[in-house]
Amino acid sequence: MLNRRRWLKVGLLGGAALGAAGLVAQWQGRPGWQGSNSPHALDHPPPASTASPWSAPAAGFFSAIAPVLLAGACANAQDTQRVVEGVRVAIAALSPPAQRDMGELLTLLNITPARGVLTGVWGPWSGASHADIEAFLERWRGSRLALLQAGYHALHDLVLAAWYAEPAAWAAIGYPGPPAVHGTPSA
Image (spheres, rainbow, N blue to C red):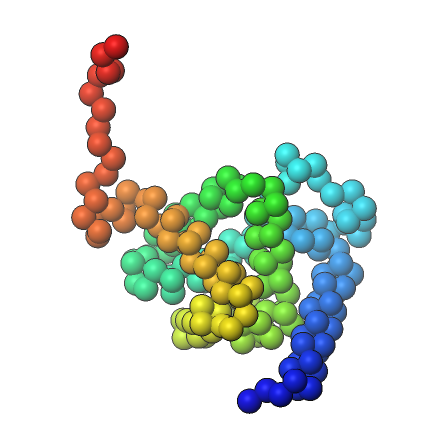
């Protein structure tokens, strides 16, 4: 049971850890998830119209969590890759502020100290076990912190939307596909 003093200590420690992780990311020349190695990238961010909230670490993260969230529906690596591509397309369609928020979340989840503290996964996502990822997702889903719950739901919804947008997934749920339109309506 956390009393008020311990709660404040944990909050301060967590804030300090996240701040340190942000400084480490800046120091390493990774300003967000644009993939830039330039130490001056923060001075000249790309224009909003060309900024892409996608990177190899983001793809690796979604490759790791998609099979867990889909609970076996992804039968092979090709299915997982289609889901990851669908997530990329879905994120690209988000508003710029939503893309920025998703970018910040994925950046945080790819900084080792922050990832370890927030998810319990201390190594790279590619090496995380199914059980470790499942435990992280379950902790976030049931968290008392609304921010972690929102993060879980954003990840969950992106992955499931990408999966169910795939024609290969439709048969499993009995969806015959969109209706065929024959001809044009009469005026």
